[in-house]
Image (cartoon, rainbow, N blue to C red; front, side, top):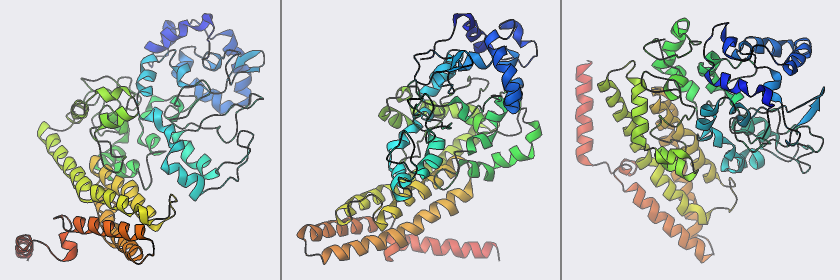
Length: 482
């Protein structure tokens, strides 16, 4: 861990309480910039003018917190090196930020954001490393090669494991990287700069939705697209000049009321709650897995402190945000709608789909993503299933339906089931007894699924009463709009 000189430790006390945008903020910090940082500035304002200007617009500048206060290192640090007489490191890790921002870092470390680097060993990364990639990118830390698809894709959001070379330099496959779950040379996880971009560390930028959209976008987690579609996103763009984004406390109902951003709902203060850097503390469903689960369940699997915070508490935290603009009845009814969609997805598609995929495994080539069914099922839950659930969670109707439940249903019935039937036919005609037996079991599972009330329509066996009710409703609709 980096050791800061005793002469600058007083800055930590200052930075923890640094809050005023006043130009006189330095009055409660060091009287002037340290000699070490002055020396840094003399060079960098000539060599890196934009970097110098960004720092000049920051609260760090106004508090006399300079280059050396953040980048100084102990000679024993893995990434330390000598630079014009000073021992520094390029990476400023959460451990370093935590010397002054202790509470924020503690919350962040307990969040799913800090665990995002687990992607490196996940099924998703198999796609980037094997299916999409190769070993063509050869570096000193990866003499056998690494996939450029993973380096430039997955790792830039989820974070790389930064490798320090014998020379002290950072391996180019792992740096530059501001992935939010980055594994740093000092053993810490995360990158504060993922949201608080160097070297201005603008709070307004961190609150801007596009900051989150750098990673939360695309086919499997299109939160920024959903937000832009929602009434919240529409209101934000229409009233951006009224958002007061650089306000210090930034409490809805006091400092702004035009629209919420991602930060408003998931992190920022309310009249009753302080700012939190654990983005899971207001989420009552984890919609990442095959089936949605309560967040304390997933936190327990990762040994995170959130395992002790029930979903009911988290939902109340979010409702506290919502009632800044909405009535209690409105909020309660919206949650009824959201829970209904989760129940629909889990029970109609995720649970039976998971059972069917498991039953089909003995009939598949034993290679991940080596089968058509692998891709069909993966996209059903990982792409379409997430889109539907996230769409409902953020009030994006088009993503909930056309990009979500419609795509799920279409591919469940016209892709997954036909592929299962193909596997059954091949298995029954196999010369291997174990394949024949597996095909019979898969057929039993498929018959059971399609006999469920959720799927009877597919076999033309809709309940007569339901069919009659639908016919009556259609007639009433036509009469109403005749």
